[in-house]
Length: 339
Image (cartoon, rainbow, N blue to C red; front, side):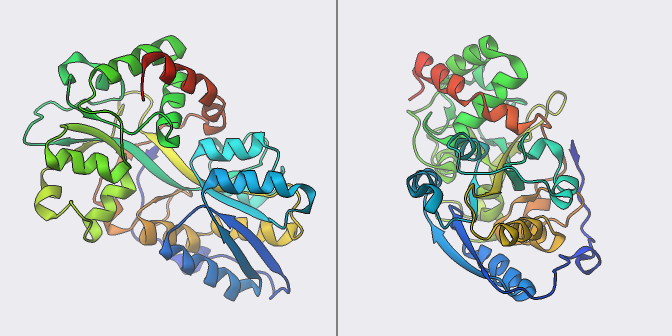
């Protein structure tokens, strides 16, 4: 899917069409920890009259909590990051299938669960970054990260990280298990250091000289373009180049932030209203302007920091299928010694 966003979206023309003010509340279990999401919640309440009661925590902790609460769970919506966690929630039985024309029409089909138990509402491209002073010919796709030409140059996150798991799961889906195993082994052989830290730490590794090539989600880099981030000053940022991988093949791997209606939602109607709101142009713009993400809905305005990364082709592989490969991905990580 070619991402070619317009910067002139008129939000008012397609803004969230709220129903008449409704009584009631929404119990939101969220692992998104971004202050900018406050605008999402307050605007939803203002438009609908529905009060949001929020419980925050790590994604896996919230899923475990919902399981432990069982039929007595007060959760109406689970909002979390990464396809892997959304699939874990589905497998744990804490989400339910819903039929909703608004969501099915606005959210691209590859960003929806096959059984409509979760929907993606924002995206992050997981791309290759490199030190421009040290790398004249950066890898142009994920497969090239295993090329011996980059031996001792690559920084990456650990195999326990969901971003790592989802990326390898996508490689499995696109290239097969045998090729994915060879790729993972090649990347391990090219590590400049043991896997460690978060995405921003992979970028800092380029600045410190610990590595020359790394992978990170775009919103970490775009955030550093927009505001001060420790260890990533303007001079450092000017020396970091980036590649949207596999533009002549499957395209850049996309991570999701998504949500689903809880299996035992006591306020199911309000939960569905909230998901419809997240798919509105108004909320979609907030995801980009507030947190430097790509909207899930096509044609929605990008923030300047995100638009500065340029146009690209994203992988349109069905992320519901990708998520099913996570157990195989973990097996491969273990077999090749990816810590």
